[in-house]
Length: 317
Image 1 (tube, rainbow, N blue to C red):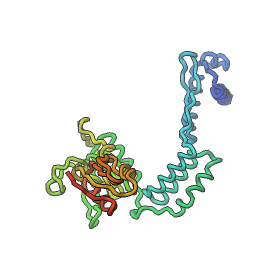
Image 2: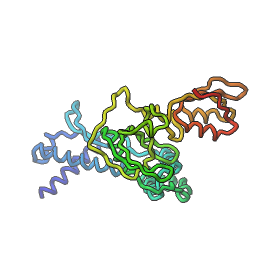
Image 3: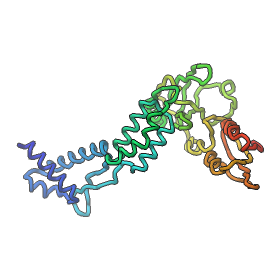
Image 4: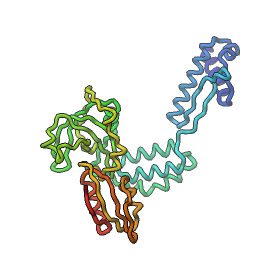
């Protein structure tokens, strides 16, 4: 009988909260003939239920104490789900990234549509991406690495060193490295780790021995990962700012920082400015643009070659 009374009390409290009413513990205790601690436990049970709703349905509601009204009330937050338009856009971006195996991509899209799109519109979004889902081409490495990426992310947050065994792009040679992980980035189908290497002969291993910028590793090529109980510290003024770094690197090819100037003679200068976030137009002559940009390494050379006759390099400095 006591359990039945508790269930009734909790449902009664929840009903009043849903109606926007204020719950006073003392009044509810008198109403049900229990002490205030019992009412407090009922409120905590309802809070636990709301947390489950948040995870399963994206409804971020909570019970808070209103000091002005001297009681508890339900605080409703906007649903955490995406709009139909946002879910469609994110689905398209995910598919176009081609960053995951087909099974991973299928599971991600299913979860996205199930949890973020109202049932009445789910079929519409599903139909709009159906052809791309059917013909999705997974990356050639066919590796699942999300768990590894999460471990790296935690190590970055906690400033812990890591040890990796890494398979190089050429020759299938494997090397072992002790790293200070700094950031995870994404570019052209792959996720990358930016990290400083510990205990390495920079003169022997690096093309630019005094290059103080991080080394870039493709996460899917990390064969073994171990997070160490060893911490590293970087002064705030020397912190790695991946947003600024990302503006200046093309195809994730590292190297020394440089400036370039080139004439662009193609149709869309806007596409150039979007591709090279540091670019600025120095001069315009008869629809041609003199552009200056700041970049890292040799990736910019690859991009310039792709442009063919649309680009004429003036100088690097």
